[in-house]
Length: 266
Ligand code: 2AM
Ligand code: CA
Image 1 (cartoon, helix red, strand yellow):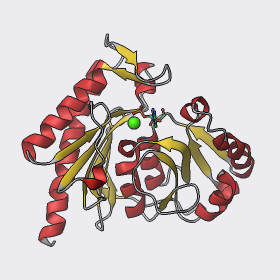
Image 2: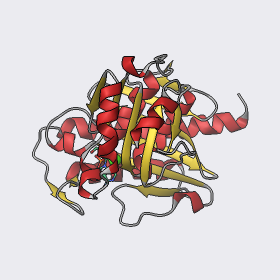
Image 3: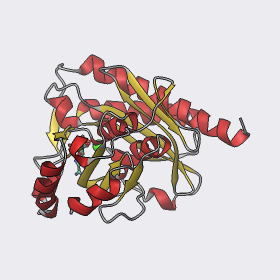
């Protein structure tokens, strides 16, 4: 292992440790008496548990690397992570907050480390199934320490894909919905999971063949994109252009059905 790779593994280990700390808060507070409120609209919630998890993750990362920069979903300021010098961490303390608040145990914590405008290592933890997805750039993707790869599905008719719905509707992005019936008719089934990061991890693991949506944020996709690419899949915008974690649409797949989906998603 070169120094460089071992350095990236160190980032991955710290991401995984931070995710485990947040995961244990998520589990112990689940169905408990926490409070939550709306953010910019009635469709976006943040709970006390999100804030506690973010504080814990940030605390752990900064203890290990005091001079690194932080972009967290629940931070007051959202810096442009690609213009940061050195290492920047992209943190989603609970991805799937609406699921969490409703007592639906499908959500995760996502912690990524990026350098030179690229995500280089990260971890997604599903604390309810004890599934830890990890990836290191150019060194593969793993689930609980075992290598994972995307599905082999080649035909849309055999594929199971996932998406999100609500934000697109509110912002008048009806284009997402004009593509929806075409996708629905072409694939075996469409799922709405409610946690983008965990759905992306499922694409990397081959449980879903693809995932697309009209609008996500950088912390939603940072680890998921790396997992999928390291597991042999492909991530682009909805026009097939190169993707990096940002505010906007995304199409992630096993690669084999990517072009067929691109042709019908928008
Ligand atoms: P969150 O739970 O961390 O807010 C379905 O709700 C998915 O969309 C979740 O992954 C959710 O992340 C994400 N999401 C929620 N609000 C969003 C927003 N305003 N923009 C983009 N993605 C959002
Ligand atoms: Ca999120």
